[in-house]
Image 1: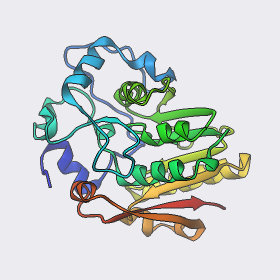
Image 2: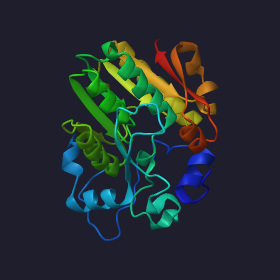
Image 3: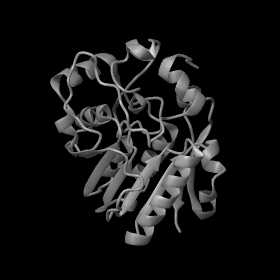
Length: 264
């Protein structure tokens, strides 16, 4: 297990808290983004950002549950894998890890395309965008990716290109607690990292279901704030996947991930 900088924070407390939308600007680049932005992910891909991501990530499709999907990720062969977190010029690159909950969701959509076929899908907290890509591959007609980190939007563009897809609309900002939209399906993985965040997700997802009959799918490898939360009483287990050895090593030895249907 790597124990440095931002990767130490991953193992200590998990992915970033979604309610904290602050991010660190590049020291040498001026990026004209605000904390809320809607548009195509391609609009976030400046030449400097593309060059930086090309030089500091690796294209891979191995060691996870979805070999059909190519992604740009941080791997042991990348410069910043063992570099000090302070030297990474942007917000901590949580989008550059393919989290186990997202892997499970993506695998489930690829295996069950009827779930999203001809549907309007929101990938909440999309990170690298793998689940949004899986939804598009499975026939979703309208896919929107959401994350609080603008660099995730840039990475999404490049990951779409790797998989021969047009870039998806990217909604930057914290949607939890906002006015609900008429999504057919919302997918979210690896987002239960505190009681406060779990409570907020619980209430907002419930509103989405009540207002529009939205189908909500959750992927999680069994983190404490998920398995101990009251949301458990409203979950239906859809499937469980054994995690590949490489993913287990990068996630404190978690051996499996589960996909749940959340209904009220």
